[in-house]
Length: 427
Image (tube, rainbow, N blue to C red; front, side, top):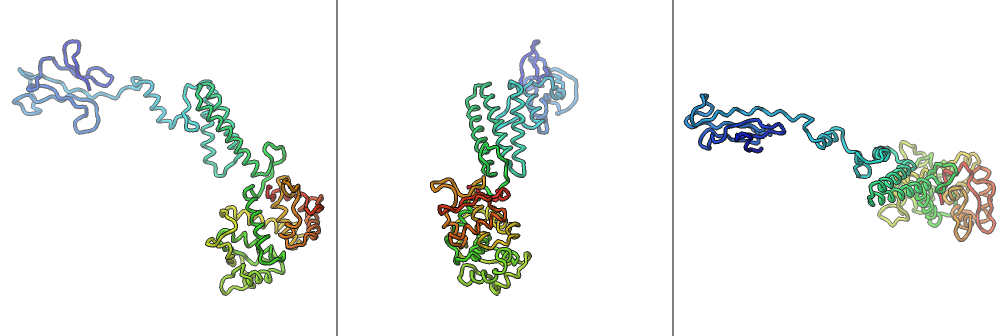
């Protein structure tokens, strides 16, 4: 609120962008006479428009009506000032209000995209890119291929933005986006088991590379730590270990046990309980476990996997479920069942799947060359090394391995059949 002297020596009160709203004659209305009192707020509180309230004249009741006389000045009540017209608001304020109504400014990577950014195609791309990243964050499932493409777009757009504005921080952001695109694309390729930039068909893998590492750790634990040497016991130890890997306990049903071990299930389960590797619930026998149904499974305990004990491996519940499902798919393969493959042949199928490259070839490309050490394979499967070739032949007949199986030089060389590639451990 400002007070000043007008052109005709009159006292006036400024309104808001509307000029004078009240006026009194100068030289009258002393503090003891009919002066004025000004408030920034209207009577009664609140932040209303400015008003002028006349002070009562001496000897008169406040609010009493009377004609203007000596020593008094008639001061008209200032009228209510209407809100300013839209066209009187500065352009910047109007723009701010408009932005507040429409929501947020266009943003990407926590940066505001200027309205006047040129070229216009860059401004549109940055705006749409910010919307695309936010839409990706709302996706129920990640898609690394889509994310990699978004990072590529961001790298190109920010590089151009940096050229236009000479802002080095924008170029740094572009470089980070390019690196993120490469990393994301590599992660996607690893998940699908194809070389980065490869032209081959994309194969949906059941395991990721890291889950393949966990699978091989479990298989090695079974190879060196099985309490019984026979293939039947080793197969049961593998499957139950994957059920109890996290908590030390797992549920099994009669259908599970019969599917893994056919007619040997009761004897194998009882043998594992007798040596103390497996604990059955109180008052539950191996025969009772074989009769358990999916709605009432038998909960078995593996003492060496209880979390309070030193444990051979650690992974989360998602990985545990994925590994258990992967092993179940291998052991329960339809063509293996059709060929009536025994426990040793099924263990060989598990081992070859876990130790294969994305293209299906067995073994890595280390100093020992391609293939798998025959004695290690035999140890896992409960076989003699010279017997591995026979079971590999059974896997060829079942369409698990391709025909070029070779056991020369104490190594098992071969390749998974194309239908088995989704189960590869991605060495």
